[in-house]
Image (cartoon, one colour):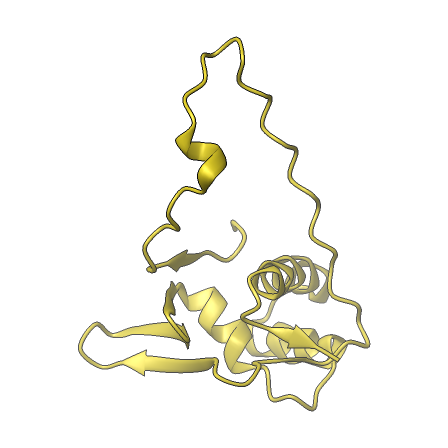
Length: 129
């Protein structure tokens, strides 16, 4: 199964001064390589930071992750991962819980959930302690 997907609904940021200057293809610098997002450690305790909420929309029948000036529509896998965050369980306990609930291998859950939470942490929608 593919990694969990979350779609950001916020409008794209306006281009900065560097994007406003015209350049030819010969002058254009190569796009910078994306830095790898560090994985979530087994002993880390992921949680939703202040101002970030997980909400179910009864009209759209979908889960959304809401933050100041941002909203993300979640797929069922992303919603299940975020629903498991209670701020007290570490990542290992969360993956064990999800593996038992969905009858899936712990290693696969840890890989997929770790990648998803790392992406959410990079967007500052999830924090760890």
